Image (cartoon, rainbow, N blue to C red):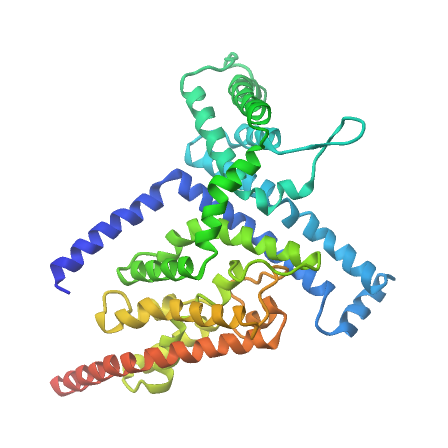
Length: 431
């Protein structure tokens, strides 16, 4: 590829990256989902303890609290019920706060108004006495798409009203702690009224809830694409293509994929806890722990076959960080960006790992990640494969993906290493 063509591609991709990085809505969604992830990990820790692979460990821990094993597991499940089961609510608050920051608005009224509007659109059931009963599942991960839409609409409407100055103005002598709540009354009233009207129209004329409509119109197609191996492969190829040109592909692609994958993950968790068949081969654990194995093969290949001083020095500083998922020393140390020697393995290895893993899961060679365990991205491979699948076969699958990725990288590393050796010999002779 000619340099001018490369520069053109870089320019176009740079504009794409700038759009994603500067778009307030995309950034708010990405940051909101990132704020949700720690709670999925925390809940996973408690669920792991409750169903620890070594029963004696669980029995010992339960005895410390003078509980039976089943009672202990149920008490540990409270953390899951207080976090992941209200996942949509957490995402709503996180995105609303981030949108308010992006739009330079007071975050407290935005968050609280969004909370009220979210509950206005959330479907209820009537008990025999005519009281509204809220099902907790309606504010869980299945409502993430509704939470995203509500957060964005609330922020847009609120900002529009705020810009027009339609607020209650109190004298400057009034303390901000008093004046700010009064200033938010009219914007919040208008926003809440709009969402109430939407609720009435949907229920009266269409007999549908906003949750049903959003999940059918937005959620169903997104889950169909993001939950397919075709969608995963395309997403991984695109992410790696961006990386080749020095653009943080994961940052862009994950902002789109994470909400979808988290919903799929939660569906698996719900099915597992109710003793039903797991509906989704692809989910957040599949993406994080199996479909992301690729570039690690580069540093392993360098460790095995490289002889140049440059690569010998690199493997000393890059191998250990990659054990904990930190790939920047490899990416920038080789470097992989704009080195056409490495274009093919950089682009295809994560997609190859995704395909291998998908086949292993659909053929039942490896148990599908059940969604109850979501480990931090710094968890070393092999360990993470075991934890998310609950089986040693998950660890073996990761090992197979690493071996295949390394084999793909080796011939390309040899070519680059020979080039490095020639340069080093040339420089040595020139001294």
